[in-house]
Structure formats: C-alpha cells, structure tokens
Amino acid sequence: AKYTIVDQDTCIACGACSGVAPDIYDHTDDGISYVTIDQNEGMVEVPAELHDDVEDAYEGCPSDSIKISDEPFHGNALKYS
Ligand code: F3S
Image 1 (cartoon, rainbow, N blue to C red):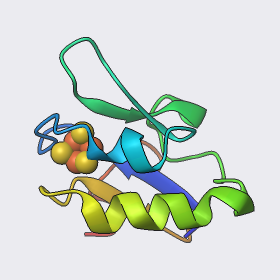
Image 2: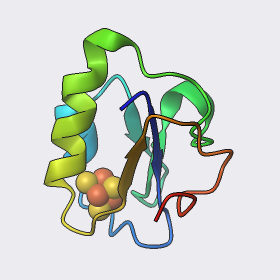
Image 3: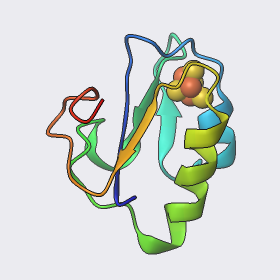
C-alpha cells in the first residue's frame, strides 16, 4: 500500500499506530491519530522503507481506523471502503 489515512471519526486514540509506525502516524492533543506526511490527506506516497510499518499499524488498529490503498485518498478515509 502506497497511501494511508486515519479515519478520525472511528479512532479511539489507543496510540498503537504511532508505536509501530512513528514516522507516519502521530497524535493530536486529544490523542486522535493523523498521518504526518500529508496532514492526514492520504495524498503523499508512503516511502517504500516504511510500507511494512504501515501494514503493521493497519493490522494492529483495534478500531480499523487505519486505511491503506494503492491509490490516493484525497482526504476521504472512506474512499475505498
Ligand atoms: Fe487510533 Fe487506531 Fe491509531 S485507534 S490511535 S488509529 S491504532
């Protein structure tokens, strides 16, 4: 998956994603996650060396809020749901 975005409506601020992929995910003051490389727009390609980290975050999110795709999200986390 080249692109990732967080569905901030379903994120429960568990913090797991930034633990496994700290170069991609960070949290707002209230703990909600966002993608750092493009302000959670899902438009900037994830660097190849970070693909495994993003896959781990995707698999580890307890609320399935991490979205991944081979195509950009254009800011819509539910674009490919
Ligand atoms: Fe939220 Fe899932 Fe990360 S609940 S903090 S997007 S692991």
